[in-house]
Length: 168
Image 1 (cartoon, rainbow, N blue to C red):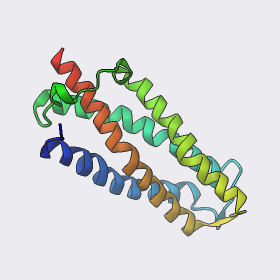
Image 2: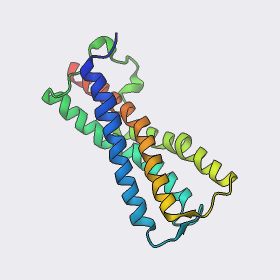
Image 3: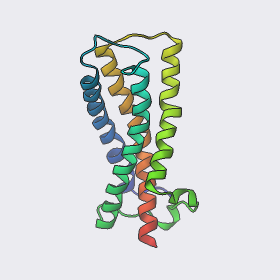
């Protein structure tokens, strides 16, 4: 059964494009604020590309999961987003995990599949130090792409959870 137009808009625009743009701006600002005193950002060290990417890869999905899950549950209760039909709800107990467990799983996945390969490639390519302005742009675009990938999944998971709760 295909998703309704409202659910597609919810997942692709409200949980995809908008968070992508938001994270582009937010992570660009965070990168600027954290590293503005440096001419170039080293790959490793306390204030570095590697540490920043690993932290962002965990925190972006984890915090997004906590925030989006609460907002989606509220929007389903208020009728702003319709619950998924019963035929579209996952039947596995895996999808009924707590919000914090979902966030932890997604954060660890972000580190493993989002940051680790990028940091590994930068290390192999000996890409250091990275000029400040290049790093800020890289961080902003990378975080936007990560958000574009994980936020629709988080939105769907939160919608399925809220739909299960509403049906119970």
